[in-house]
Length: 461
Ligand SMILES: Cc1ncc(COP(=O)(O)O)c(C=O)c1O
Image (tube, rainbow, N blue to C red; front, side, top):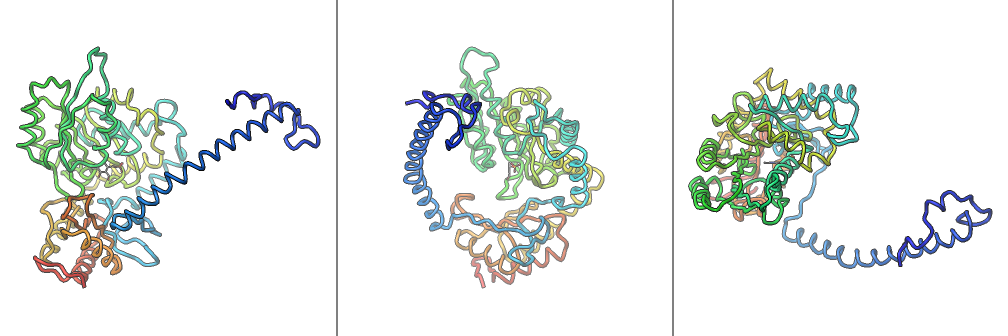
């Protein structure tokens, strides 16, 4: 039986209430409403019955499995802004787990810029960009980002995650008017970020063949590209993080640029952890590695070094950016960035341009910390990035250690399988320009006190 068999609600609304009748209106209509409500309630009852008995039980089981296997993520509630120290559970702890590389997340000039933008442009746009959600400052930020990154243009998204989804779904799904089905090939580093892996899932079935190359293995990648040379793929994409976020390791970008040229592939680099951190001007891992302006497509975030709130972008050739603006669904059908975030991001770029001391400080702090932590006997991965992994091996050690460190006043995150490979559990320490030498020494002292370290064995005390 259809709910529509009863009198439409539009007519019922217009009728006058009848004195003494609980529903008001005329009796014929009221009996229609009653029948509709009865049918609606029975549908609801059926839904209620299926929902908790199966799905909720399965979810409960899954959650308890996660807890039993030590994989359940607990969130810690900070009672202060982000910074080198934060308030947690009524006490101050040293923060060494944040992507706040330049210390801008609570910088007075960034906050002032956010407030000024909100005062001038309001709180939000209540719209997507192409309807009525584009303010002059959105376009200004896109142009500034493009200039900063050494490319033609940039397009803002609500996050880097959305930018990555938007790029691949748009370009690889598009037939560009061709009548024959196409197949593109994507060559992706095995350690690429989750947003890249998920981006491939939005690609239409059959439109893409995925090849996952062993981490940073250029010979393997070259071989894959060579083996595929005669396979008639429409376009080929090499995809890599600029900085691998669990390792703090830079991708071999100059070699990837060469491979892309050699095999006529497009090179896509997600530089979420590089932009605002690496390179002479902070333009990221391409600048650090001497290939500034040579990456075909860059994605990045405004949620880490460049202010730490929210927002992402794709930057590259004019045609690519123009096309995404027309066709990218995660751009077209999602609200534009709030003015406060746009204003603050512009200020972050100003600060980077005017004063390189933040870049210098985060680099010096990272070098200092990396050197001292190795002297203490901890095993780290070599590098220059402010992500400093301390390799521990077993998940249990990483879990216990991060907990003990927190109790001692150091907030550092432990990572274990499946976030990192089995047996490669680690602590991920993240350094900021906002850390003073005292913060760094205090963190090192807590690490040393919490663990009696020998190269072979680590003992928590
Ligand atoms: C490499 C990489 N790409 C993308 C993202 C997602 O960035 P956003 O928070 O802007 O969505 C992250 C965040 O952790 C990241 O590390």
